[in-house]
Length: 355
Ligand code: NAD
Image (cartoon, rainbow, N blue to C red; front, side, top):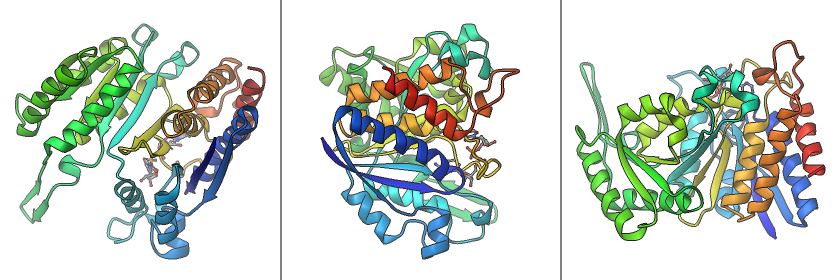
């Protein structure tokens, strides 16, 4: 297959982890005889420095044309003055809204080889395989905001159409998994949640009778994610709840450096990025864990290009590399020297080669 992939390395460790993800994609291209064209563009702080804007016109054009976009990370202390009116994160928000990516997918799987890196006891981690689907372009983050010296307001609005499209995407994804959805809200308090819950009940009964639906309040979900995470399959929720629960869920796997994400629009064109930031504290030292970005490339193959076999090949290769003991500092085994970003990428390529 032919595809145009937008490559946005960004700031900090972004370019370091992106290089390894691209090596994995090139390997897949060769092995499975695809032809991917990679076009690189600037985003975030580096774009502010060279073009005065965190999401310049060239990058916007690339995002409109590409079949999928792979992003490293944006931001860093150089651009973090809260009083500045251009900031790297505006590039991310601009890109999400330009691409219309309304559903953010974060898979959270635990693996015995990484139990020790999690703050939770291993008996809480066995068999965890969750996909969190977070609504990304509505709710309080995008509502009207007001501020006086003594009060502040953030309006949270959701329309039926916004709720239905993300619930539908979660339903389709549940059909590729264990067919269980937990819809998370705060329907005992919030009007938006009551609308969310009633639409979820109707829509899943009508369109997804083969998928089992449960509703859960967000406070209970926060607790159950730590006490019985293995019971969940797909979690679907609104923007603010999803933001918090996805970070909480990430701790099940141990390191931020391991986790990928995808943000999809209705045509499944997507933006793929590791969940971590630009890690300025370790940038430029060649020690960042590239697995979250490599696994984001696997999600790109699966969701935007429909290449499931190739996606699974990368995912399996990452597990094999980690099981072989090859680990960056964030997931290193006690008493064993950590490897560099490039060595970790090499180990993934070796594992791909021997599959
Ligand atoms: P961060 O995710 O960059 O780092 C948090 C901690 O995790 C740091 O100690 C870092 O060294 C470590 N870490 C992160 N990724 C790692 C990896 N791949 N391998 C090994 N260790 C890793 O979060 P932060 O420090 O709060 O933010 C730093 C900058 O990144 C800020 O400017 C923030 O705005 C930005 N940020 C960007 C994104 C994004 O691009 N999507 C997301 C979050 C934060």
